[in-house]
Amino acid sequence: MGKWIDLTLPLYDYMPVGNVWAWDVPFQSTPITSDTFNGYELTMITMFSETGTRLMIRAMQDADAPKVHELPLDTLMMQDAVVVELPCQADDELFAVDIEKAFANVTLKKGDAIILRTGWGDDENWVKLGDDYARTAPHLSKEAAEKLVEIMKENESELVGTDIPYWGGGRKYQLPQWASKPAWERNPFPSVEAKRFLANYTLEKAYEDFPSPHVLNSADVMYIGAMCNLGEIRQSRVKLSVLPLKVQGARGATCNVVAFEE
Image (cartoon, rainbow, N blue to C red; front, side, top):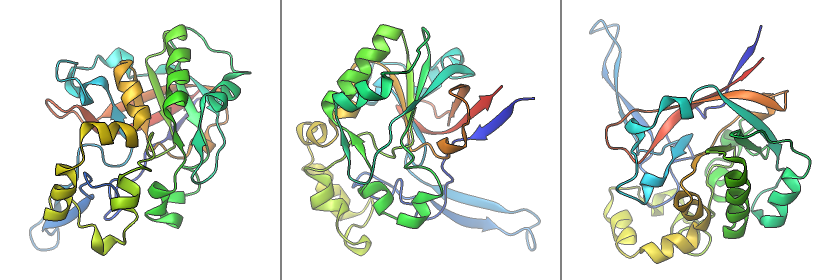
């Protein structure tokens, strides 16, 4: 019998992934009714579209590209996937040479989905580090993303995922000017402070801060951030399934990700 492995970051109040950048709306849950008094337990949930483990697609930057609800299931369900080891440490910026080294001894089959395993999402690291799980996470440089896209296009791969929470580092503007502040000085969106920051955070600044997502979006590949528990995968090849929250018109979405080992 095979084994299913949940690779999805749990959502909980004030989780660090989705609670750091100026555009984040933290996941929060508020009771609506009580099972002991009303007979049922119902909860109001607030979050932004890419809280926690998330699927990102070209539509993030291209209004004419297919939205989340339009993605064909055969590109997301039970995809043949290969695990690629990409060990790194806090604050590491990965470059093309790191991607080349990671793929040096990997056998890719046409159309394989790719899982980049860094170890950052293991052992509930997000609980131990709090906001620093996102702020000090490794990230891909522009040239690393370009090398990854080159490999994917040569292999006709459409999907890549990683346990790094954010593909880009936000190191030039967002981290020093917003995310590095203590929590009580960076009131989350839709606060006046967050809106003011974003009003001056232009496309050019965003692409400088997060160049690797721009590269991936422009190349029209799907990519997953903030996967977890990749260390539980024991085989080099698995079946990967991605289940994004099916919101009409969404250009990216929080998702469930599971692997199946045969």
